[in-house]
Length: 329
Image (tube, rainbow, N blue to C red; front, side, top):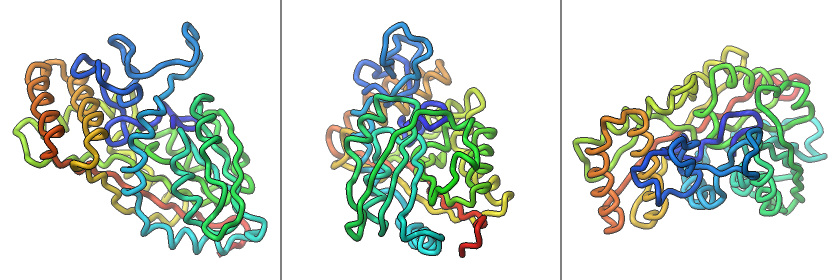
């Protein structure tokens, strides 16, 4: 799920990347954290020794989070999207959907069965390994039984243009915006609005985490994690605001809706991996937290195993409806 063109996908805690430190690193699924520098545990490459091969996030992590992602996505945005799609010229021929940073294809598995009409999904990712998973596990029918087909493309969001989206009915992405730079978000907004193509961009981290029971270190860990997300020019929790402004400045109608993960005893495996990545990212950002963070993580994992920990990881979903370029309503 590292976008057609984005930095590595948002597959870590919340949707941004997690940690490559030794705070729980031995038990972190590849991809539950960022590109690691200590031991290179967080991601793997398809071919050893190939510096040009983009790091991939483990399908295991993407599968682990898929249920929480599906439960969190804002269904309230689907009706205005359906109305726009129903008014597109040529809708009888079906819809063409470009899924940026598709990962293992979870967005398509969630959305395609919720939309009527024939659909052709163009799955974009920099990782051919994940593209294979996405193509194999893609849905085959729409909500009304119409056929769904797929193709895969490797590419870079920095080269996404309105021409590349010619004929597209919709652009989708999941857990993507927070791992983009301002320039990349503006490129995405330019491409979508230039093509008159709606965009449904889900599960961007909002910079808020609530843990029950609380702990005095919660806020400090959260602050360090958010700072980690903003490294190297990435927008992290500021991404949704930047994206809303970018689309609105280009004449699009923008709708925003919360889409939080709500993790309890039934999501213990996901919560464990999220915690390890979340705390580890904080320590990577602020190494002086290490000793306190290790004790904190130990206690939090114990509560998770006991089924007494609850976590709400806030995200936002964004639907941008650009002005049509061909007279469609």
